[in-house]
Length: 405
Ligand code: GDP
Image 1 (cartoon, rainbow, N blue to C red):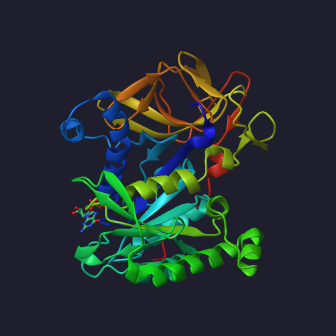
Image 2 (cartoon, helix red, strand yellow):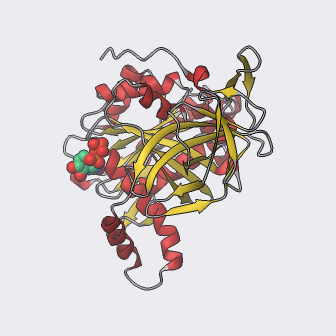
């Protein structure tokens, strides 16, 4: 990982049937497309890639899939669609730095969205809401936004308003950049920007003002500019949204339809712009050699390794352990100490799982999520460098969330 700042570890959570699977597939498609185009020349390259994905059975069910979007690398971590209150679910949630909460534009906030959101709050996972299925009859994003406020207690920040509705949903107005966004091509692969439609200029101006006023609640700088009736620079808008989102003061809201391929690229942009990188999160471990004292972990690649196994999966290529590296660098071929088992084990392989391929890598740095082979452990186990005896599990262990819905 060249740049930790541009790494995102995200989960996509949703009530069943909201479109989480379709959205994840689209994300893999648009991100995969970038590198495939480079490698495969000629007409039909994109379709070929889609066929290939289908044939191989795209690994969206993989515990963690790594994709690249512009200058960022995104690890999409599988967060269970149905919530059974197991420790396993909580383990998957806590390795996330951020999440996309997918909602159906018709059904709105449903019971599982409430439960998952409560768990996200517990682990301080900042969220972006994506109102999907804007093409469906009865789609009502305004209603969904008010449910996000009333049922989840979120301070929402709509960043877009729709152009057209239901079966005539065409795209959206980007309130930040003040432009229309349309999606052309069979797979919506070509993003086209345009003028705001004449009959929506006033509505967009009002919505934009509302967005800026909401931002002024989290930034004195924005507040002052608004009071002086001055233009708020784009950079300041992005920075304020990012800081407000990371602090969970605001929840950006985006719209689209995964099924009709509209709105996914702007969502990917927002994930990279507004959700935190591993550098934005503070993580502590307990030092078993020092009376379980709490110690802050550092993302310094030269620090001793501290990593946690959060999921064990039987993949087509064998049993793998998904790990998040919290400190230092995980090296292939190296022995590490499992602080629960109190014994050492050797990491024989480190893999990065992409949509349609597995890549063998030699090392993984703090912040990253990778699949490893060669060890036998339980989820929640902590692996450390020689001489270090930390435990991450105890830090995170908390009472289970009780579902009140
Ligand atoms: P999940 O259960 O949240 O993973 O939802 P799926 O991705 O499996 O989608 C559930 C159903 O909704 C499927 O039949 C999808 O084809 C459909 N669907 C997904 N996204 C959209 C959308 O944007 N619009 C419409 N009309 N249907 C969608």
